[in-house]
Amino acid sequence: MLFRVRICNIESKSCSKGLRRNKFVIFKNIQLPIRKRFDSEDKQPILHKMNFFKILKYIWNFLLKTIGYAVLLIILTALVFWYIWRPMKIAAYEPLHPEHLAQKTAYLEEITNTSKADNRPNIVLINFDDLGYGDLSCYGNQLIQTPVMDSLAANGIKMTDFYSCSPVCSPSRAGLLTGRFPKRAHAAAHVYFPNNHPIADYRKMRNLTNEIPKDEILIGEILKANGYKTSLIGKWHLGDLEGYLPNDFGFDHFYGVRYSNDMIPLHIYRNEEIVALDEKQLVDNKFPYGYYDMDTPITGKATDQTKLTENYTQESIDFISQNKEQPFFLYLPHSFPHVPHFPSARQNGRSEGGLYGDVIEELDWSVGKIMDALEQLNLMDNTLVFITSDNGGDLQGSVGNLRGRKQLTYEGGQRVPMIIYGPAFVQQASVTNSLATNLDIYPTILDLLKIPLPSDRIIDGKSILPLIRGDGNSPHDFVFYNASTSGNVVGVRDSVYKYQEGANGNHLNLLGSFGIAKDLDPQLTNLRFDNESHNLIRKYPKYAERLKKIMDEKQEMLVENRRGWK
Image (cartoon, rainbow, N blue to C red; front, side, top):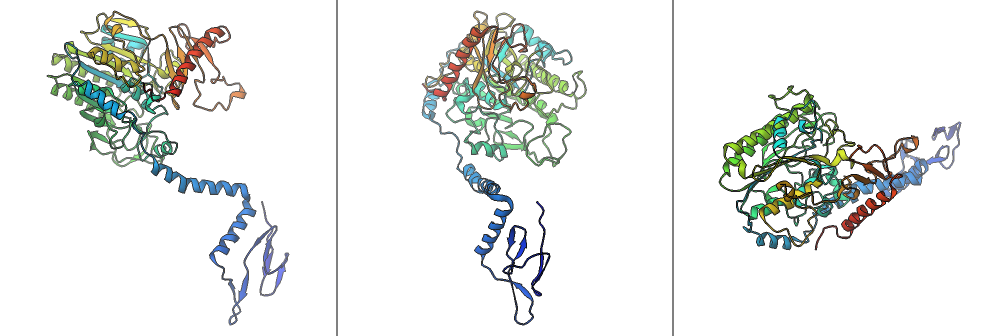
């Protein structure tokens, strides 16, 4: 809005193209108080001495007339939120109260050294970060070569219908290590962030946890209580507060990073000591997140990610060598192929799959080195190896012929590779389409060791040991899909059909009225012959209703008994 200004000469008491009224200068409909008086000696105008509250009143009235009550209210609300309510909420945040800590303690004491297995086997669990369903050559990739994992798949069990319990990282890892739906551990609302990160503050303001609760029983704690040496080498991503670190959840040894390799800072820890300090800062983005590419401009000394895979591998070999005389559990959650991608100098440029292929082929090299160490130490005949991924592939990875990717509940977001290898345990090499999830690894290991499950809580996973041994099928009639931002059950499948609601429910479908396919609509698809392209819900409405009822019952169960206590 433009204002015509009337210029007044106070000394001559005249106004140019304006009005003089009660010694105020008039700006159209706005009166600005500039009352003046004259000094008796020099007759020069000076400001009238007004107290602080009068000045505030004048400013307030001016703002009201200029921008209006509504806008001013919004501004004041934002200021109160940012400078008062927000700091108070962050300061008041506390990790989730451990309701069943006493029961956890009692269980671990009860099962101490109670494994009834004849010869306690070593367990190696390799969990890649964002490895897509089609990233390995044994799963159909034509550009990337993974001969080591191809060989393990050919001589072990290759699962074609294996799922992560979430399409994103932290929830999936919580489920993997507890055998329970991520929602039970309050770990389902997307991923955790470093404690000083703005998104961590946002989580605290919303009372969303940013660390796994203390009363969850992780597989490492159970194995440690049964005389296993336990190690986590790689990425933790389940919290960074004191008391919520790998060493606090049953791992004797930790080497690696606490978060994803795109988060800042990416210190490397040995147990709780920083052994490689990350001092990088983004040049073009001051927000401490967004390190997506090896060419991203940075300042300061950064963690050398070209050595991550090699260092994780050597640490794993050292751990195996140091504990060859006793049973051990090696949990190796690699940082790659999550962005940014950093192959070693040795591997850089070698793959026909480009930079991403270099990273995958180096991971295959890592698996080979670990298998070689087990063979050289004569441990392979008493070791069971699991190789999988925390969720589906990201944009630069391959999900094969599946639809969707990481973040989504389409198949490409949660169906992942799974290779199980162990000459003493896999009776016959096979490729199986039996349904299973990463929640099943927890109860499978306990079944193998003849350790009872905790009795105070629901374990959602089921043992697939009979399937591994070749004398049984999948224990699952159904597999469920969980939304990345809430953990709500939004889909279910059986051996053939899949029903889901809101595959893209984490995003606003703003362009729906312009002919964009409505991904929020319920879908029924035939997974045996289709990649979720054709919606069959009108053709088979009763089948869709049946699966929807099963899905709704599972969601209702999670709502009514979220923590899963018995």
